[in-house]
Image (cartoon, rainbow over all chains, first blue to last red; front, side, top):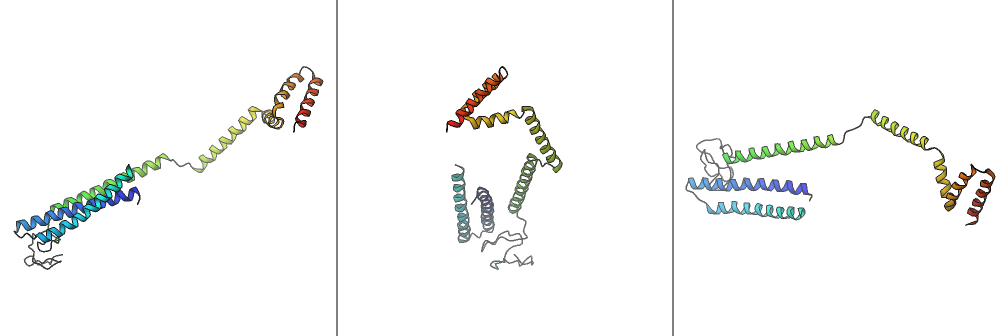
Length: 68
Length: 145
């Protein structure tokens, strides 16, 4: 994967991560104000977010290794 | 997506009942469309702004690259070629034909070239003597190999 492709993929994953994190926060807020916390739903969303977070970290590591 | 009924809206993912101002289904966690969401609006605006900036930077870089390498028209190119040829002929005429002949003879006779030049200088003083010296030089060149 070229440098430009790596940077494009990083931007895509960063945007996805930000969106998923905002969704997780929004979902928790929605449950909290309605006094209807569903921990397993929140945990599933957090697991998906963790997957994207790991992909992003791996991509950042590859970009850092290429620039050195 | 949710159904259009305001009071009996249901989640499109799990069909659980959702309120009209509910942004997320609290049963399955799906995002509900058609409900004002400031976070989603902010993210989409930021993404669009970033895309616009990236496109503007790319366009500016492309324009700068075009300016660096100006294209020459056919007439200008032909004029430059003609000018280069004329300059080449002028340099050739000013240096004279003897230069090329000298370099050729120098390469052909090797070390005797300097001797030949000196005999040519002597020729102005006495013609026959220098001619015999030239013959001697030629003879030595032929006999060397």
